[in-house]
Amino acid sequence: MTDALLRKENIDRYDDRLMVGTNLIEAYDLLIDFLSRHTLDRFFLVDNQRVSVRSWIVREVVSNILVHREYSKGFLAKIVVETERLYAENWNRSNRHGRIDPEDFTPDAKNPLLAWFFVNIGRADWMGSGIRNLYKFTKIYSGGEPELIEGDIFMTIIPIKSDMNELDDLRTGTTQVSTQVSTQDERLLLLLDYCSVPRSRDEMQQQYGVSTREYFRKNVLKPLLLSEQLKMTIPDKPNSRNQKYVRV
Image (tube, rainbow, N blue to C red):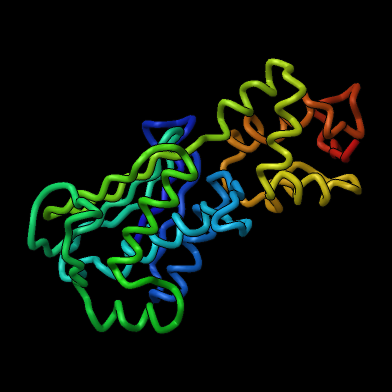
C-alpha cells in the first residue's frame, strides 16, 4: 500500500488523496499519474534536446519508493506533494544512516531482483545513475538539491516550483501570469480545449483529474474565470444548477 497526498491548501489533512494498493506495475503508473497531475511540467533544453525534467524526477521518486522498500514491515509508505516540496518516505533496510552524497556513495539495491526487473521493463535506472540524474534534474527544475536521507525510514525530499503563486497572481488580476500558467501546465491547456463546448463543473473536474471540489473551485475554475479564459453560460445566475463553462 502506498498513500499519495496533495497538501497545498489543507495542510492538516489533504486536498487530494490516492491510496494505491495493487500490483507494483499498476502502482507505478497510478503514482506517476498522481504526481504528474499535481506538479508543474516545465520543459528545458538538456544537451540541446527539449526534456520534461519533471518526468525524470517523478519517475525516480516513484521507482525508488516501490523498488527499495522493505516490504516485511507494516509502515505505510507515502508520497506527499506540498507547496514548495515533494517528499517520499518508506521503511528501509539501511546499511548506513544520514544523507546520501551523490559524489561519495556505493549503490545498494535493497531488493536486487525487483530492481533488475524494473530496470529491464524500463521503469527504473540502476541506483547509481538514478540518484545522479535526480540531483542533476532537480537543480535544473527548481534550482535546489534533493535530499536522500537513509535510516530505518528512507526519505526523499525534492524542492519544487509550485503553481500556487502563479494562481494567486491570477486571482489578483495579473494578466501575464495567465499566459505563463497556460503554457506551463499542460492540464490547463487540455481543460480549456475540452471547454471548447460548454461543460458542467463536474465534467471539468473529472477531465482535470482532481477529486476535491473545493480545491478545483479555488485553484482551477476561479482563476480561469478571473483571467477571462473561461466564461459562464448563465452569468446572471452563477450558482444555477444548469451552469456551464465555455472557453472564451
